[in-house]
Amino acid sequence: MNKLRILLAEDHETIRDGLKLLLNSQSDMEVVCEADNGRAALHLAEQFLPDVIVMDISMPELNGLQATKKLKEKYPRVKVLILTRHADPVYLQELLQAGANGYVLKQSKSEELIRAILAVAAGRAYLDPAITERAVTQLRETGPVARGVSPQANLTAREADVLRLIALGYVNKEVAARLNLSIKTVEAHKSNAMNKMGMKSRVDIVRYAMLQDWLKDT
Image 1 (cartoon, rainbow, N blue to C red):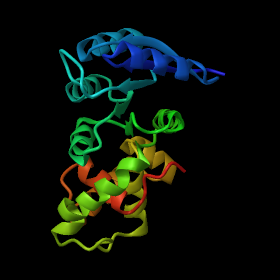
Image 2: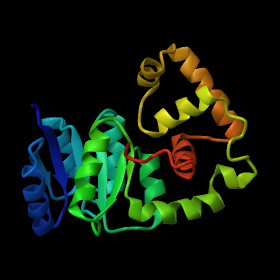
Image 3: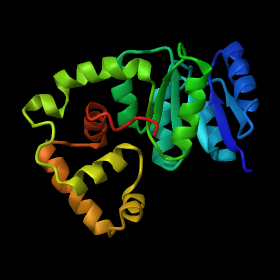
Image 4: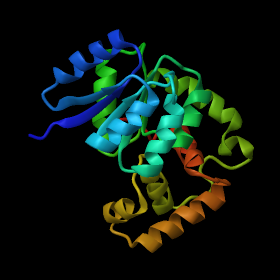
């Protein structure tokens, strides 16, 4: 069985050592490289092309947000999982905008991190349950639904299917394959749904998915 190849980006050596010990103890995971700052994470990602990057936010040179933006621009298929102590939904929104695939709190149990890594590696989005309730409360006040759009906005079942898969991190080609549709049809459903909901970006889609409870690890 091929192991998931993981890059750890964390500037505190003690925390990094603990994470490495935890992940290497899993039969299906292997830490292949470590970085103590965001710039080093970029260089190592180019060199090792890991399956998943576990990324802290607060790091020197480039922080986790800056590093994630640059990584996703250059390597859009690399999965970035944010591991941080910051529980404020503002951080979550910014990192989703940057392209992060998942968000886990350092305060959570180690099992949560393992579940998150497996989820993002499989192409799904993952949000720590400890932050989801708080984030949803805020998004109800600021998200697309709160701007006068009905929670369902007359979405067709197929439009909802397309939005859900996009929120989970799948690109149009993968959505088309999963739903047995053409890429053009997927693009049309996505465009129609976003227009109905007043959505402008993937972040709005993820916000809506959170409110609909679509991002569970199922």
